Amino acid sequence: MNKFFIIFLMGSSLLLAENIMAQPLMMSPQWADTVCQGWNKSKPLTQDLVGRKWMDNDNKRGYKVIHLYRTDCPKSPRVELTITAKNEKAMCTYGGKIKHKKLNLDVDYLMHATLADWICMGKNDFGCGPMMAMMNGTLQFSGPKMEAMGVMTPFESFMILAGSTPADKSSCPK
Image (tube, rainbow, N blue to C red; front, side, top):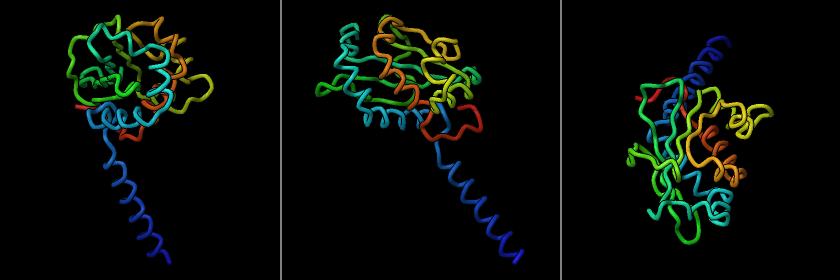
């Protein structure tokens, strides 16, 4: 009986380790691609941002850029999402390494928080959801703030998506 239990525990541990290793590192290019895919499945992000004219503020480039990183990983590279208007929707057309090195903070966004704060925003718990994170400064944010306030529901959906996308959180991206 004890041998069976030990073998069961060892097997369970291996499966858990495999599952963790299979997930992309949070804030890695692979993670950003997963977030991009999640964006495209979200009605508040794909439809509500277009309806509120968010996509129109793109400096006539045809896209908006969001850079993300973990504040507790200052030496890690940042990741990027590129959002493009397609078929009357705000679609994420790229998620990965930084392609647009220079942001135009009149139209683009830079967001960073600690791992703990990203996770908390992803849970959307009382006291640490996206709105509270913006108000108390646990989410550091640069970009068109008034525009962001005008699209608070989609913005919250994005922060929940970013904080809840399955990821390996054991170390900083390299």
